Image 1: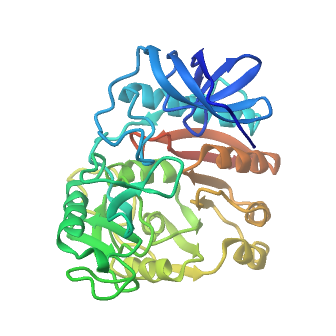
Image 2: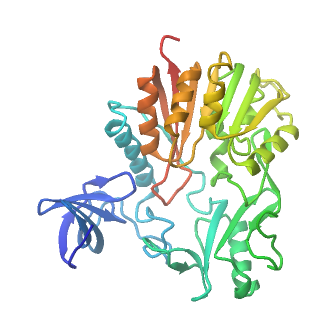
Length: 415
């Protein structure tokens, strides 16, 4: 990649692309402009060039987009955490739907128009219940990485954190000696407090790595235990709706939950299916999944509820294994699978995972994704393998950022 001289250009932002950057064209080059809004007219500085593609930063907003607003966070532009604060919330939602649609069309060759409903976050601010903070002992700065670097942006107040995590951040900043703080601190909030995981011993008031406090969160009819050492979703206010969308009206004999984590989907599946198998490579997560399944809570249904779901969960099998390895061993011997759910990391499912799913041939598939590009890549393979795309639904799990959660529902063709 070539370094560009500090030239500036006046351009109009055409639209926002996957990754959250604005698209513009000038002087025979395609420009990717950070922190832009669609229809902005801006003066940009060319930061670097690769062939006919240039990466640019805004130095002046000449004519702001109708959807551009003043970012309320004083760290915006420096902190690498949020890149959509310059957009009204409605514009953020519209941009995320278009990003999903773009990926499905460009990567998966799924023709538009495709209806993509999006569930807005009940709280566009103060929604984030999980965070990782960085600490730089040489500068005594604590917060998040600055945009495009590993330098730490010193953050005293983070507008997207739930109040409990903001309080934990303040306590870490103000009450713990800097020589005791590690480079990375993980924190997550639950109904009964905050779990903080740090890696060096002797930090007063907080447990250290592999010993983080266990907390709980009630989502719908289920109670989940977890800690800061493992993964749990960021935006808890949307989880009940996300589970309902991912499962739909699925019921039957056998369901498989791949990348099951602490059992977010496994628990409600066990109320709907006679046999449920959860597969997860992280051994700490599977410990929590088994514990959550063992601590079953009966649903508190309102009087007159028409739900036909059982009041008690069926036993579920939690397997600690890499998804692809488990599928390779069991896809031909498991028997008929009525429903399969997968919730892979941002990198999506590996080729052997998709091959194993196709060999398993579940009747219905629900794919939960936090990256539209890898979702589209994997959907293309599933569709080529004999599945039809029934629906795509978005959830704004990450307001003020370009990230979006998407649930795709598929059916085996001929079923």
